[in-house]
Image (cartoon, rainbow, N blue to C red; front, side, top):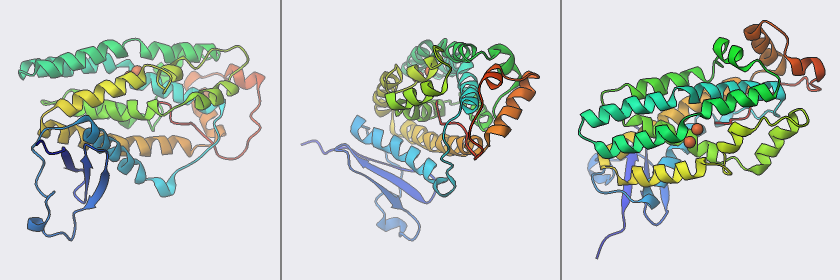
Length: 300
Ligand SMILES: [Fe+2]
Ligand SMILES: [Fe+2]
């Protein structure tokens, strides 16, 4: 008889995530537990299963976002904030194919052709996604190329740097955890989220191409499913590294998003107009009626 798979990973020294193939998942606090009495003190070594691996990955995202739960900004979306979000989407997409191909080359050198092939597939699938964000910006009347050349949102910069670093490592397996984190969060977006953004846009402007693709309505759902299958098939050491990086990326993402969400519309507009050295066209035609603090919605 084959025993059902149980997987566990200590993500941050204090907390381990434990998941069963059947779907049960729980967080295990390691402090105060005697090492020899703790069956999860040693790293797992067995095979994975999609049912348990996905729960480790999603548990890692949950723990990462829980770190800012008390400080979480919950603003109403605005058009200016959406422009900043699109600029962020551009920057998190533009180097993805190149970075993934670099990581794939390294895995070929390391004699891991199956990881290289997976990363090359992902690089192909992600090609051109930066252009979707540029098209959306243009549809809003924003000089897209000039804006992205002069402006990277502060909250997004650490995320981009993390991905660049991960893909350049000697053993770049962590880039798979980073990608999972971003894609999983994107795939949570539903039609109602897209409609809400569309309602902010000028009549007739098709400015939600990036969001539609990176949502539960677009290719992101398949990307997430492919990632789960692949990660579950990896050896235990790799699964541990991937889930730990999913957690680290979720921490960086949560801090970064919150940083942007806490900005007022006036602050956002000032940043954008400074980068462009001119007023935004939609600002001339439309007036934001809100004075309270508000900002972007996570869109990646
Ligand atoms: Fe993408
Ligand atoms: Fe994707």
